[in-house]
Length: 618
Image 1 (cartoon, rainbow, N blue to C red):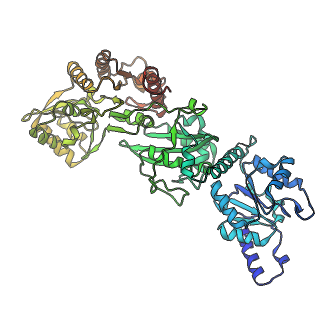
Image 2: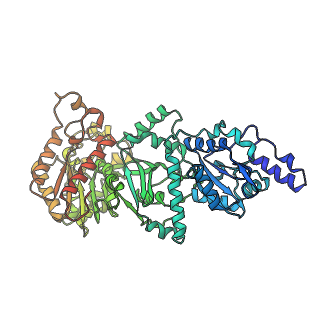
Image 3: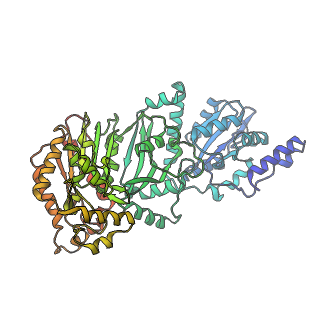
């Protein structure tokens, strides 16, 4: 019979005048609905024998040892007692046990409301808590005010050490106890400050470090995914077998469409460690959350709100109830400062390099990079490839950008573009109207290397047209290729228009590439920093067989980019080859494993820190 049911019986027995002794029966086999994370102890006639104010006590060394043993399993102990707080603290300090208890509640008021307040402060749900007391009325009141709370009489204590729900997880360094003691100090300080939670947070120097190297802390990520409940928003679990969980998570982390980070938090009261984890998956450069989970040790710091806003509030399928509403609660979290790893350990936090605007235009290579750079601005413009009207819109081809900086298209050209599925907005860009302030731009033109252009006979419009499988091929000259790559009726209709109304202009010449890139860079103010991503010249095939020739079209593109960038002091070249060492780093020629993009990000940040003259150093 569950412990809670027994307490309910106790309450009914009392109301009917049944002898109290009949209700105080021993719980031989404790039965809890879920694992116990906190034990709340009454003291008189429970933790020790006797009543402190009525003639002294018999201290129970076995209970003393149990509190320490539970702490070493990561299971906390608290106190809810009717006594004089100063006397109890002195007694337990003398025994060397005071610091093993968290959030002690010692006064003469009813225990039910005090336990409710304690659970709210600690951030635990009642079903994961056990309250021990020798008074059945106290147990009944506590269970009534805290639905789901496990309660028991002192006879239950001898069974706790071997109860399966109190096995916990080995914590010989008492790190979990240290985290809860930190939270306790913070709660006390908040009360002293007047209880205004938000004002208190703004004065606590809360800083967050997003550690993208999840692989280095894989077990902690698995623990957060599988063990958090109250602040696990998707509740998608990994296998319980640790090796299987590592293999599954590692496989997902390796994908270039995966973005993930562990979240470490520190404030003036201490370091909370890794308290959160998120993992998002991108399809056609649209992000969706798969894992979003946080430890309750930072509950009411709004770390989860800050993280969700930082990610751009992507879609997330909520599962069951949580203690926090990140979707409905749109409050601005302005008391959290993103920090580097070094700054997390510094006495005085300083922010990471920040930009008023970051503008990125290109393909999925930039989509993978911008996940990291989003930390460095509140205004991120992402102009990436995306599905459009049944085909992929390749913004990484400069033909779609040039009209935005060279006066736009004529009405006749807009009409011609529409016959291939493009609209007026597809030829616009933030680069055509650069924002004011401190700006960082990312450019990637990989499509220029091997996607040919076509010229409209009547209007003179020149633009690329591409379907999967048509790279570097003349779709007009090859009817069999048009039939092979067209998968839908709209695609077949557009290819028919292409063959009828357009002529094949071919790949961009090197001179035309140089003209365009010079014109684009001229559009960007010289005080803005520009990062141009080179195209990979070798893929897995070449890395496994060095005798294979590099990709010739990417070589030609890179040669032009190096020539143009070499004349400009505000342009930084980013070569993926510098961060790829083995074939296993790559998925294919144009897509890399997630750690490669992170290494590219770290390199850019390091170089920016060395050349930056107006922002804090990272």
